[in-house]
Length: 455
Image (cartoon, rainbow, N blue to C red; front, side, top):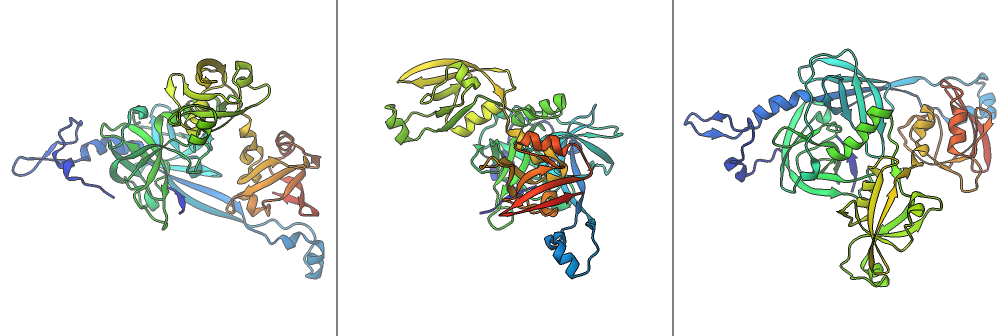
């Protein structure tokens, strides 16, 4: 099974007898005077709000690591002095949605614009505008763009995605395979999908409306022409569309969008708790009914908001602000969507009794591990404090990223940056900030040590 970032026209017999009063959905008539179902009038208004996004990225060409070996260079009579790798320019395509016509605000997926040097937005009427990145949230996969020197835009209204039901008709609009604006339709197949390991925070709308590579960042709309989700991924066992696509609910996206527009970034809230799903075995061990649903508090971090509020290990969270909590993903999403300082009310089971606890959401430190926030040359590398407390370890790396192109690899330990020793993400960030154009890293690879110049 392969999960593919993206980005069948379904005509159901029952759709032909649809009598719901959808504005503009049934305007045409046959020669016999019979109404002919059509989404065309609705799409004529919505299509103008969905855009195509082209990104251009300059990446250094890969260089053989032997070029850094002095013996190798002398043996083949290669002049001393590091040779700059030739840059290569790549282009990719995605989709986006205009959400504020007055200010030229467009939203798309983080993975569509990640690492882009230049962003060009094309409208349905073939007009093109350059765009700049306002900010993004990689954990939800949302990015906010601002168009430059724009005019005459049309935005799309938001729906309340909390009111979606399985079986609701939906329309997906985007730019699949770079073909240009394309419309497909289907239904909501499922809600609240999580555990797919696509994003850090998952609460996907599942749909059978055809979503393909290039649709990423495009609109999922209802039959009132309102935005209900941002298309982001497909389940593709054979590499193609099989009718299982996923979209980020617009309510979830809006939480990130609002913070990005206000602060330029997202600071995600947390309580400082370790949690796990309540299984039947755990329910039996805690002497509660095996049909009980909730989330078990496995641990509480010292000095955290949870500890200050009186939350204890062994508590079972059954609701948050009056909304039932059934699993870890749901609780994590609910807390993560709150702003730092927000008050929340948790209902927990403790020793067989129900207890209400009020707590304040604290700040999450997870964003410090984002390599792109440390330095652009480290984009694509996952960083973590070394287990040996010596330097910063690269735990994973995107093979198509800038970090990989510079020769970094998973397992490397960064001991110094720009000649300054580093022992934390903060240390690395401060040292790397001393130069935008060049980054000198002291790397421990296995038992060997070497310097690597990124420029």
